[in-house]
Image (cartoon, rainbow, N blue to C red; front, side, top):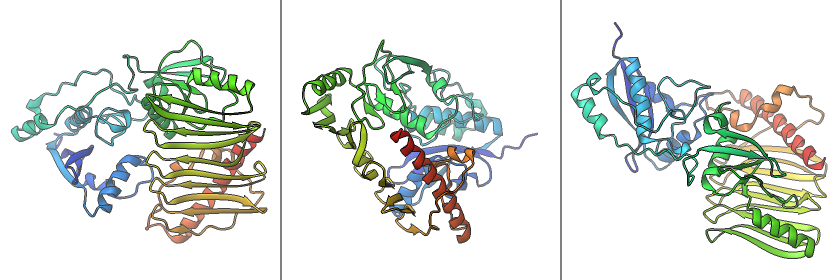
Length: 402
């Protein structure tokens, strides 16, 4: 006979007494969230825990439903996550990413329908039944924040031709990747199509028009009429300034001065999002990206095209993350921890050979450094990452200069 040694628990933010994570387990499973884990990529949860600890408080842990068999624990975990909703998919308040229960990788991250799952309260004692009734249903399921009931992603090429139509289940069929989540969030936040590796829209359009002369940044909006007006102005004048607004909020400002085009884009909130400068279609001088909170995200400094350059990335708290540079013929690579401490890295060596499988690695896939790792291992890990960062960046430059 199976023992009832499982439970469903909640992590609570003591600043507002709000649930922010729901899990199931036994023993001291709930403590695992406070130790670095290699394959736990739930950054929202980790950031929430860090914010609470930085405020001088500790996360509150509540055992919502004790003394359960494992199947009942799985069932309750999924229903509570459903009731409270996940932030990442615009459902509700939780930092959970998957829907809980018996979910496993390659399963859909979305619920099969919008009706609340049934749970037999007779499986619980009186106290747990009361707790279940106290948990509010906050979830909403307009994932893409559309004005209709369709939750689809439409992909277009840069000539404006529709290439693919996908449900959200199909869009995330290869897993919940960082890039996929970024595209999803940008689509949710904007009514207009957005520009990235291709053009994405949450509404069907017969044909898109996107100017090939505008130096778009990742997740800039595509306003068809604005793009047409820009191309018309481009043919008529070598000096002009043009603005694109949605809901009276400035989203894009473009200035042309002969061969040089400067583009500044903005978030729906009105905060600055990116700045780019190009000459005859090639990036020049300076390119910047900002987080929505106003802190710098990426800064690129360029001289003579990409013959000399520096690229610095920043953490969301404003501290530096990685700096790669090639000024005066000298290659440098520097890394900082999120708290601002600099990491010592061995000098970059030119002519390093790389295995093809290394190309898929990126910094987000690396585990955070732990105090338990020996210093020599830290340096080795950072050196490997520096080589990969260099290779990835060089590949980006080669694409731009083709």
